[in-house]
Image 1 (cartoon, rainbow, N blue to C red):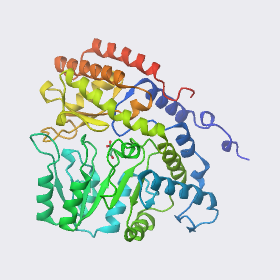
Image 2: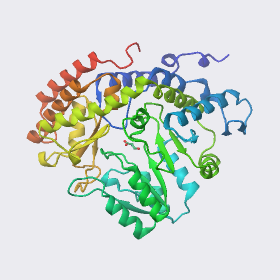
Image 3: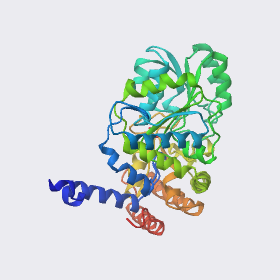
Length: 425
Ligand code: DSN
């Protein structure tokens, strides 16, 4: 028998093993503030790395194109049942490989090329797949965007209604990647009903909050709900589609397979089932509320330290920090904070005059820090540390203040050792 079957990774491939070890150390030693990232449980990681990697299971439970799918059926059926229970809906497709593919499946199922749809503008916090001109959604369909108001940086529902009346979209998408306020799903429903549109919520960012009751549910208002599973929901890197009306079942299932995908990633489907089970627990409910409490503490601390939060605060897990008054770019802030072991991403702010490669803001989120155990006290400290680094950049330009960054690294190290990631790894 070839020995490679039984070698562990360190023996079989020391270079990849070393990179994985270094990534674990990075996640342990730096504070993760990217709003779309999290730290999945060991059980989720174990399922993701399981022998289901080896299995083809094209089709759906009970109707496969391959033999040997008994246990694939078990995990997919559990994943479907748990997703339905978690989000209180009638139907679920747990096969989409990613957020982009879940949204593509909705387009393939319900629209024809050239059809008009509405989504939140990327510059106001939308997503590439909601109509960006560089994405298939913007190239093959006719997107009409809505945005936030200049005065308060909140979604202008009157403008959404006026745009919908003018363009009569077939589909309206609510949900985004950098909008920190509560979505008014019933207001979107009223507009969709008035113009005869299907209403899709892409709740990827907030699905963990919805699961735990820390953000209102898009059901029953939305016809279809999509979500990635690795953000606040804390599962494996993947996507799901949920709905209530049976008329969508065949088109959506056919769009995922065979429309877009072949064999589902059954190891990831198994991990999704594990994550949904975790999210059904009272502990997860408490976690989801702590994410929001921590985000409010972080936003308040940043404001106390002279940094402006877009829209004046947050209702969810995330916030955009406007660095315009400091004359610091998002690009320099991301780099300076990384040097200080605080990981985040540069992000355009509403009406940003800088390019997406530079930007005037950073996006911050609390799901990962909350998972490792940080509470409001720690997030208040983190807000102060961020402000110190940004002030160093404001004073010295892109290279920042070396001494301040060194001092921040020390305080980050203290926080990270007090709240370890995978403590027994
Ligand atoms: N890239 C994700 C995010 O960071 O929000 C969205 O797909």
